[in-house]
Amino acid sequence: PPPPPGVGAPGPPASPLGKADGDANGDVEAQEESSKAASAAKALYTSIVYGTINGIVGLPTMISFVAIIFKDPLYRPWVGQLAKLGFLASGLHQVVFTLMSTLPYAVGQVQDVGLIFLSAMATSIAAICVGSASEALGTALTWLAISTILVGAAIVMTGKKKLATLVQYMPIQVVGAYLGYVGYFCIAAGIGLGVSEDIGSILSWRLLFQRLPLIKLAPTLASTAALLLTLKCSRNPLALPGVMVAVPVLFHVVRVALGYSMSDAIDAGWLLASEGGHEPFWKIYELYNWEFKSSFPFIGGIDWGAMPRQIPSLIALFLVVTFGSALDVAAIQSDTPFPLDFNAEMITVGTSNIIAGVLGAGMTGSYIFSQTIFSMRAGVTNRLHGGIVAVMELALFFLPISVISYMPCLFYGSLLIMFGIDIANDWLVHSYRKVTRVEYTLLIVTFFAILQFGLELGILGGLVLSVFYFAFAYAQAHVASFAVVPSRSGVMRTFDQGLCLDVLSAHMVSLSVSGYLFFGSSLAISDKVLNVVDEMLQRDYLQAQEDQGAGQRGDGDLLVAPSTVPSRSPSMLAEALSQ
Image (cartoon, rainbow, N blue to C red; front, side, top):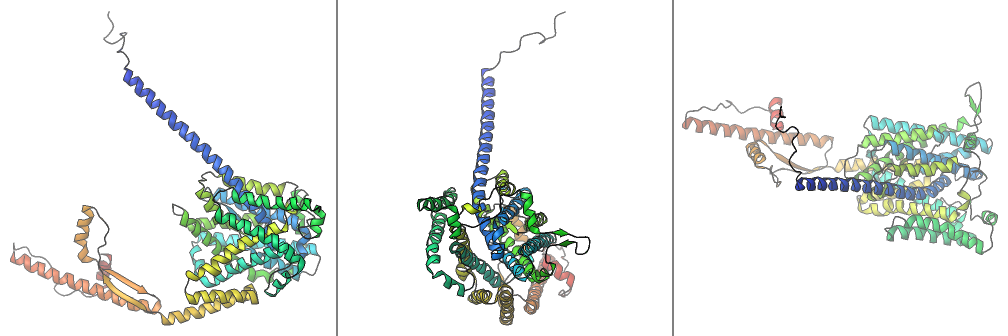
């Protein structure tokens, strides 16, 4: 029998137009795939380049921070090994931020804000310990690790309980004075490191007016000027790393040209003397000097009695690290196009400190907002960026090499001076236009109190002055104005929204209040608000009576109205306020 219609019969000829459409669709898909591949390659390239740049910037910075924390001469023989612990701390912080932060371009390192208290505790332990230098070093490392763990745990609890914003209630003048002192401390430590002198107190600056310190000061300041000018004038991301590489290279070129050996430069104080840093990484943990025993406290070789005296500095360390981290997150948020979970970011900060402390790298860390924003603006979208920074830092911890002796002291000093100028300029100079005159005066007074009496007493004095200032401002506080303002804005609405507002506008009241609102004045404000609500209810009642009369005169419909003016009952007020 013949086949059914259409079976075995040739189909219609293919349409050339359909074939062309298929080819066009295929071309579009190929272009999209090619574009995606190019974007992925560009993102990978950007992450590698800027990860390398941030790593190059971070390595000498970490050595400078270690020089500040362990500035006491007692720790000088171990500075090379201590620098490796600094690389471990920064690498661990970066690993945690890369894995936990919501920002793929996050940079988390040992932070400058906590340096002062870390240095103060290490220096105090060196003065207290009456045993050997090894015992003092072991005690300092153990306490710094414990402090970092405790600070991290406290920050995690602060984030989990959503209390991070409470830290911001610290008086701005006290925080500004402390951060200004951090800037001053970095400048003084940088100059002292560059000229091989201990610069700290105001009187110690007279040590600069000697022949050898003045000779060393000139190239230190020249290196600082080169770094600052590069930051200010160049937009090329490779400019600053290039200058940071050029300064040590130029130093060694001049050293060789003048015929000085490495040992000569070390003896003259141009290079740091380091006896360690070339041994396997596990040998570094021998610096802790732990001697295990079968009786309490089970660990000997360290002075446990020196630790309780550091508790006030530990509390202050928690406050400044938490506040500094809050400022960092706020600064990053200002440049981030999407909202950040403030408390979640604080949990990330706390977790990184716990891990660093547990693994023996007791140096507090947080976001480095300048490098984080720098990476974001560069278009970094891959977490490989943070991985590269971490690998560079951890490599210097694990590999049996030491780079500390190859970089001149003037280079480390110029980095610290650059950081110090940036911080001091923000909080001691530019803050003049950001706070009231009284607050700025208190900031400067607190700053000089810290210089004169030390960190703890200076900050305590600043807090006392801030309390008195608050009491005075509270006594003078009053509500400057209280007014009823139009309840309709100039915002363009849809037609339906406009109809709703026309219906509801008679039942809405907008109030403008300016001035201080404290406990006593808040009661007066509440009475004024309730009076406005009463007036609104009176107006609604009179309008209802008019509408009722008009209804009775018209088609006979009766509008129900209250027989009396409603009293100020809680339910009526709640309903009126909800409207």
